[in-house]
Structures are given as C-alpha cells and as structure tokens.
Image 1 (cartoon, each protein chain N blue to C red):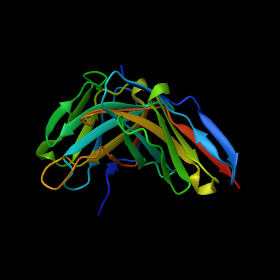
Image 2 (image 1 turned 45 degrees about the vertical axis):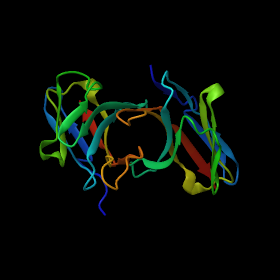
Image 3 (image 1 turned 60 degrees about the vertical axis):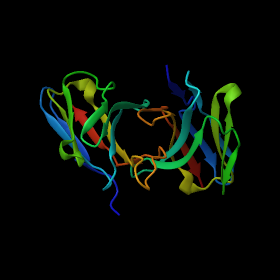
Image 4 (image 1 turned 45 degrees about the horizontal axis):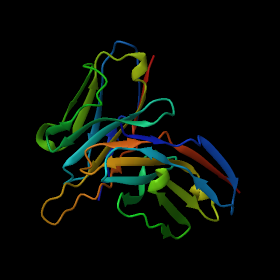
Length: 114
Length: 119
C-alpha cells in the first residue's frame, strides 16, 4: 500500500534558523514520484518540487534543498536561513507513475518567528 | 491566467442536508482531482477525472457522494445526505494531460478549498 508519513505535526523556529521537514514514504512500485507542496494561509497548495524514483540526486533551489534517499524511503526538505514568509503548512506527496492518484502526508505546520 | 477556483469557500449545513461543491479547473486541463482533508489529517484522494470520464473513484467514501464533470470542464461534488463525518476541507486540483506539446509532469494546481461544516 502507498503511504506518506510526516511525523512532525508542527515546528517552530526563529528567523534565520535552518529547519528540516521529514517525509517517509511506502510504496511497492519501482517507478513513482515524490513531491513537496506549500500551503500558505490563503489555502491553496503550491507545488515546490517533483522527484522521480530513479533520480536520487539532491536538489537545491535558493534557500530550499531536498534530500531523497531510497535506502531509507525518505524525501526530506530543508529550509536554510528561514524567513517569516516560510510560515505555512508543508505537504509531502507520493504519486504512481501515471499520476492517477496522489498520496499526501498529514502536513507539517512551520512557524517562523521574527 | 485564472487558477483553479472553488465555490463555496465555506459551507455550514445541518446533518441530512445536501451540499454541492463546484470546481473550475484551469482552462485546458483535462485532469481534475478531488481531495479531502479532515481535521488536520492527511489529504485523501477522492477521485480523478480525465475530461468527463472518471478515471479512478476508489477514494469516494460511499454512495452519498456524487461527482460529475459534464462536458469535461467544471466539476461538481454533491454530498447527499451530509453526515457529521463529512466535515472537512475539499480540495480540487487540475493538471495537464500529455497530448501534443503539453506534458503531464504531475504538478497539480490546487484551488483554495471548500470548507464544509456539518452540524
């Protein structure tokens, strides 16, 4: 069965601190995709990144970086030098190869305090 | 370009009543999904349309839920009769399907959600 676990319900940090959001997934598929979405207070989820199961290279985009490790079935998200605007709920998701169905975690609420 | 829009943003109804949620996807997006998040838990899949056809409705909780997408444009999700456990935020998302120059990358475009409260 497919499943995504985000064990951290809520994290609070002070601005400029680094923070890592954990994501662990379960799947029997050999081809799958992993995603991170950000949900700001307005409510809509906003796409951040997609990774396929054959690409374990870590990715960096500005202050954001992602660490994909198949050996531990994890796809963790790190924000470096956090800012107040990073405050949001972050969701990790897993998709089948055909994008028919997506499995989301329960989300991690990040509070960045000034 | 307009994003995914959902209506209403919030609905409060009594148990046993009927509610219809509407989703207007991004123009040209053949894929349309409905998801639900209950009480801070995970966002759960309800169903997936490709144009007007139901590709997968395995996530629909029971026959009190009916989704339609006539003409392959906007979609409605009707709950009849509503029960207390139906309360939650219903999200709609759309994406492109691979055809011509368009490629389905799996990126979903979400609406802001419709919050349903059943009393």
